[in-house]
Length: 101
Image 1 (cartoon, one colour):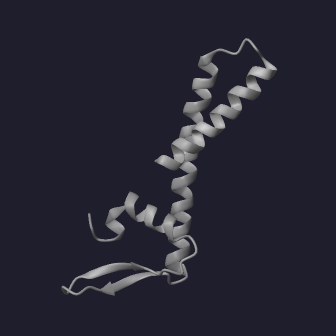
Image 2: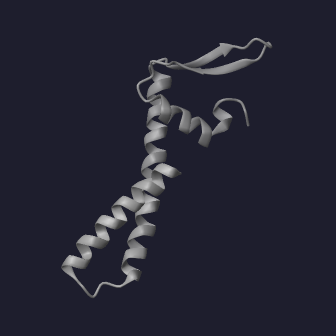
């Protein structure tokens, strides 16, 4: 969520600056609309990228079960997984993948 908000703030600030240079009569409503749409698009992009990272990690064998100490299977993500943080994000967004839901 923080990444989405930060990216949205940067893009909205850039938009507001450039738009004010082009049209000094720009109202806050146009900037607000841009911000809302950008937030949705960045959020969708991040979720889609996390899903692609998950699929790649599963396909390349970076994700697999690890036998836990208490006779339960625990999901293991290899440390060498190139986009590990996105795989973890995808699991956090979809906890049923890890069997924790």
